[in-house]
Image 1 (cartoon, rainbow, N blue to C red):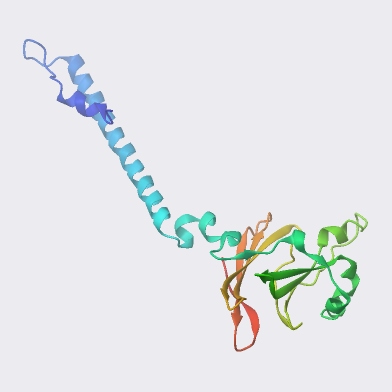
Image 2: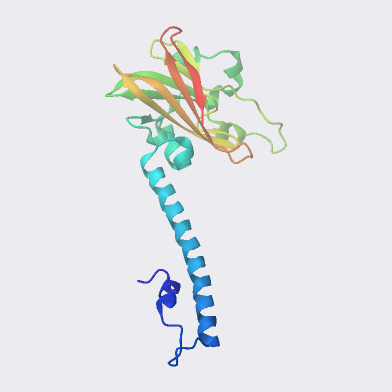
Length: 220
């Protein structure tokens, strides 16, 4: 395949049989030179694109490859994604874990087990917002919901998720528990899908052994 036909044009004879350059040959030479310049610029652009793709393939830095590699909380290596369909209504015991702010929402609160190998490490307690709002009048003012609780298996609150799970209208979230050690996750990744101007983000909570709680580490 010939990438730059203008280069071949320059190699062809530009003289007539008498050895004297004619007007048509001079025009052809000028056209060939312009084609060559355009072709070189195009080839340079392809080289830049190819280089960028190569960088994205081998570097996992946020600015190198974008959302696909840096914001996939549900694809965190070794992570356990919280499954909303496995969450259940809170028990009488679990209701004792919640303060006064939770009382208006109790029928719509769900408890989600975080476990591996049938051993519960944590619970996530969250309001099922869509179910709650389905029973409200359309002109009802916006409701402020408590942030989901992260509760240890011995019933101690050890943190809160940054936004509601599954939904915190107009946002939604995926939560992944990662970096497991002795049956306990040391990291919690919350991927936030936000259709507003704020845009999508990922929030990382990390376990602090000194305070025995999860604290926000960074946001991408």
